[in-house]
Length: 226
Image (cartoon, rainbow, N blue to C red; front, side, top):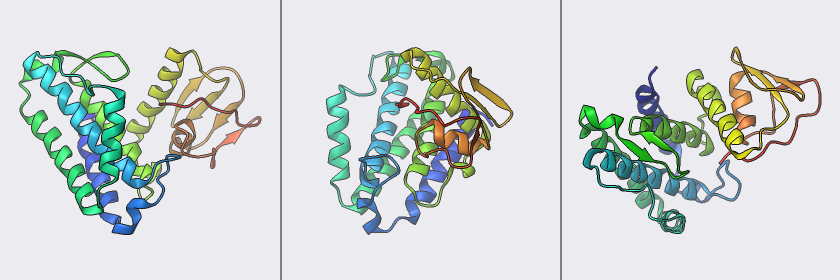
């Protein structure tokens, strides 16, 4: 599958998870420590609008950052999280539609235009497909509404693990561990950890304590991803 196909399937998975929630569920905890499902959904909506900004930048040539500031980003998550369940769901669906419309409006040549992510990386606009695919698939799991890492395409899981290790490398915080999963190997040195790719992805991203994995020593503590 292409990154664009991963994105489309991921939006559907997120919609499935969202559709399983009843009103009382929004105030319950997500799999992200300190965040309710409402906070998570507020973030997912804000991410869609932020990526729409990047596509606007690529299409018009006018610099349009994902967020005006981190403070504004956090305030918008809090605003949305305080909405009633129906209004919050409408915000998520509306932002998703705006992103889809922005994708449809992109001329072919604009996909190679360079834009800047929140982390300061300069990437082609086409990277938006992967950024959003990662967000919707991982956060569909984080909603804890029946979507699990085992439901995520293997290519997405491997790309997520790639990204986590790349992030740690940029931060100079790669842990001493070698991970074997899905026919791939990551890291080097330290204890060898092996198991199914969904279990490895859950552990590497900090969503699980390593259930389903085997190791030739104690599982090491891992740095935060993002």
